[in-house]
Length: 69
Image (cartoon, rainbow, N blue to C red; front, top):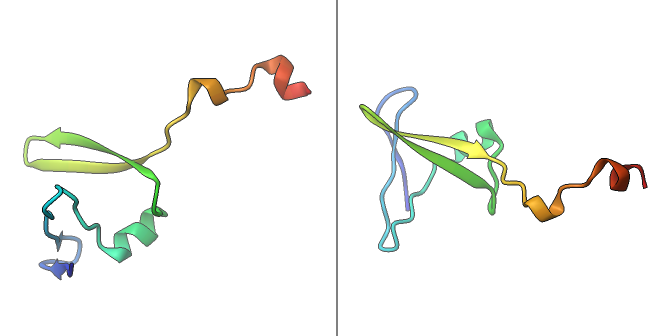
């Protein structure tokens, strides 16, 4: 699935059959997003903001006592 450039910062991708969206390689590299990473979507007045996110599993968080161990 190719992307097209419309301006310096804007890229056009395509939504696939399973609602998957291709993020242009340059943006992935700039934001250091890799396969399997999470991204957050926020609806904006003029579009959608996509931001890299890290998701912490509460079961994986160490207690201070356990961190010392």
